Length: 310
Image 1 (tube, rainbow, N blue to C red):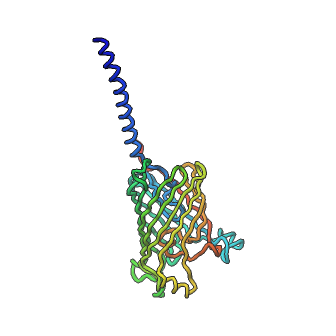
Image 2: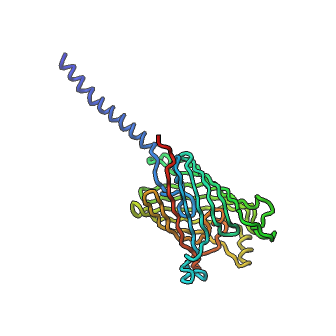
């Protein structure tokens, strides 16, 4: 009888061990399936465009973006210290994480284009986040802003800066940001975009669609190469009209180096876009890299935790 007992025990123990291993593996797989991919980008902006990164709940982000004058070309070079004597746009922003997936913000920008003295209200909401097991293969966020100009109205009714009513001062951007992180070093993003400007000059477009692409390539633990590129879909009639007037519009391209130092993220970049807000650099970029009309600039981000410690 005792031998039979030991025989049964010898058969049951391995089965129990295997069952425990299977249960542990199942739990491990379930946990891994729920793990989000972190730090697809290190900042809420790539260079000019937004990323899918969000602020944490109760986190405040103070941001400064600066674009200098033309680095080269007829308006750059040594006479303007390669653009440093001029400033095409400056933006100061405060953004706040209401939740881990919802960010709101306000900003003030100098403006570069038809309108200046710009005030912005923005919001960004993360819809889904990429997971480590590819159950969710991409991160998706929705971004939108409302921008109002406080500049004095022109007295010429044909000017885009003539404001017959308050709504003429306003413009809007709506964007969907889709990103994916490939391994530890490479992240890519696609940004379908829509810009609406209530008032534009003759033969310009109130409504404009665009698509942007962006990327980040990690070079070390704290340094990465970043770039973004936007293609606005301007009508042929609009292009031909402004070309006959001696004005051409170009796609905006930004390239730069991203440096992370503790709570700061610092971007040193070059771009042909003179403006910092989507409402302007998507439809109104008239400078080209080929003529030396690119400028160096920087973005600085400093985050603060506003959560009260108990």
